[in-house]
Image 1 (cartoon, rainbow, N blue to C red):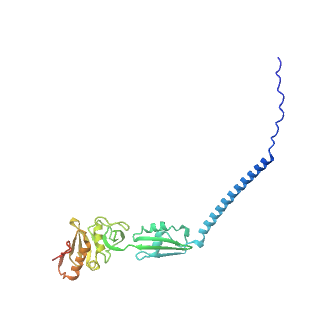
Image 2: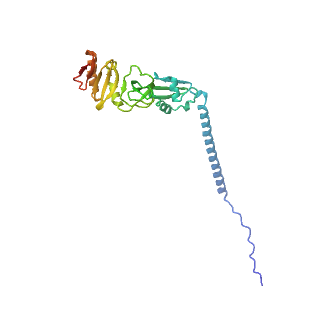
Image 3: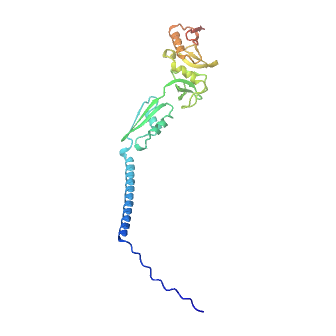
Length: 265
């Protein structure tokens, strides 16, 4: 049996010959890509270095809070305001968030409005407007002092002096809560009550049929009726209280403000 003939060996593959101009262009492209990558690395390193330096400067004692100025306090203290705002000497200025600090201050019962502002390099100002007490009300424990919106700003064991008592309402809750029941009707009376009337009033009370009455000192009541036409009713009440003999006064009826009526005991 004959052996099949074997194929003759192939000659070695010839090497490709690259055009020198193409080779030079390839080298230039690779060098350009390398320089671009180097520039990117340098820029990123520069940004990182800048960020580290900036962060270090913000943590420098030179940019700490050295002065906190508090204005508008009468029933609160600057220390209480600073504690509630979370701002204190020595903290980093960059950590002072004015909006967040003002929001925390709004939870303080006495605070109506608050504004916190940074003044570089080292001062923070806190401006507050406190609520004005206009009345008192029996509370679950003692007595509550309230502002014109019915917000409880404080509680005490004894009735606050010089404030009319709101009567006929559910017991007031702790500070920062609001009065319930017909508090809006009674508070509407406090907003229009002239000083001459306020000096004679010990309490503002709810009455049957959605009406309102004033408890006078030393005796007597003023029937205001429904909580409407309050300005006219207060003018009539002030006129009678300041110009008429109130001996043995039992009832002053100003439900029709143009025709006040007096009932004596």
